[in-house]
Length: 331
Image (cartoon, rainbow, N blue to C red):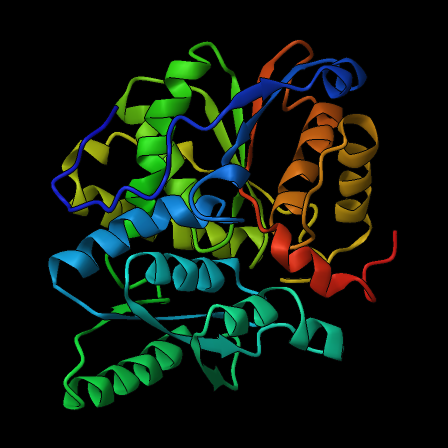
């Protein structure tokens, strides 16, 4: 297991299971495994709990009593942050961006929104969905107000120009996965902020695993995501030099399920969700895991994943948000 110099709050009971999916393996002509990070961390935590181990590690080291975070209206990261803060005796301030346009009242009131209210978070709103620097600035302004009141705030930033602490959680997960499936050929992950994707890639290379890591774009087109990942990989190597073995040529992306954009599922993602549900009883969400899983049959069909290959799908969770799509996700 990789160990880092940055403080870590132990939020995930590891290792999470890595199970074979027999019916889908037979249907696709590969050896398909699922890394069950949907059960990592707090209830419905998912991959965000692994990232939060290092953000909360830093917050606790700074003796913070309040954490602040920005995310989309149905952000699992935001909701998991609130739940984790509660478990650690801290308070949480969440700032919700209007990132997904044209959604119904169900989207704006149920799922993670309702859970944030149940968990007692202070909720702010930010009108833009593609202004990460502006959202961070608004959150830091609120942090200064809290500091003036005698609180000790800690901001979990959104924009790519900040140290990618969350990626350290997936570098540790990579070492865990390499021990479980040492002969795997491919790993499939969603690629949004880039922290799960780059952490997995850098962590595997750090322990000598050469498996191809393919990220399914869930937030931005392939060319834009590649630029983001290059920056995160560079920042990650600066943060922890032992994670510097991965390079630009290791970055593999697929954006065949991105349409019609972040937070919405097109035909490709919906078909993947049904394929997983009807063959394995496996529930995926339309924002991250459904779009990530869609990459597998597509890459098998294109020959990028050869017949008989050992493939690991990293299920990153996000199922609380699924219920916000009850009236808009046609299957």
